[in-house]
Length: 116
Image (tube, rainbow, N blue to C red; front, side):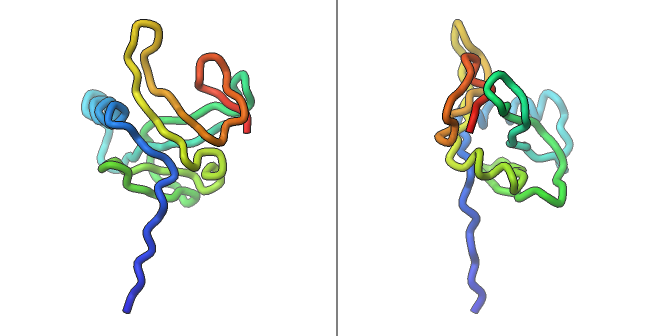
């Protein structure tokens, strides 16, 4: 008997984020072999900034399927992103993706960088 182990989804995508990502994929003609990359990189006013974009898989990536979207996450980034919610907001003062990260010890005013 084979035992199946399900991967825990490290991040969640809201309905608004999914709708916007699907729109971007269609409008930008993103090829089928490209998945959504979620990650971090050094920089930003708080120490790390978020990475969000379509990319191809590398050997350091784990692939997750989150609400029908294939998501790439570099293994080393998981400790910074576990439990994060990605949303899309569209308001008078702010329009774009937002990152609700429970691992962030502090964030910048724009919400696109954090410290861990």
